Length: 123
Image (cartoon, rainbow, N blue to C red):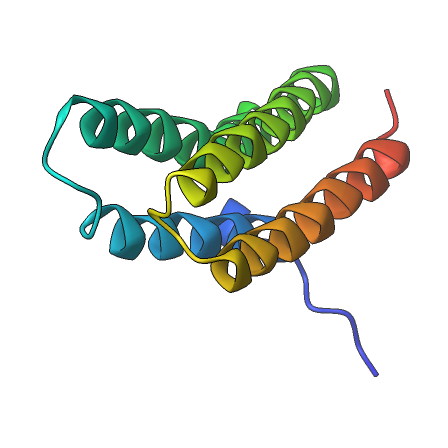
């Protein structure tokens, strides 16, 4: 079985999973209440989850291993922040416990993939 060559950040499985998570939250925040808490939570979730894939793309695009590693570390932090906001959303019943579990599983997978990628990048 031949490995697929990486020609773009879009070829990175970790970016694809982070983008999937962003698509999921875009669907979910549409259902949040139209009040201050709903707006703030929506904004924080869109920013933190959107930053995961954005930082992967930005770091890959730099062409420099050191910058890519730095961006991956930021993505990893954003992943953790996103879970924090998702827990709050579930506690307010904006998302179900099952949906939170789906996000947690995906975030854990992304986190592990970032760690793996970080260990493979040579400076």
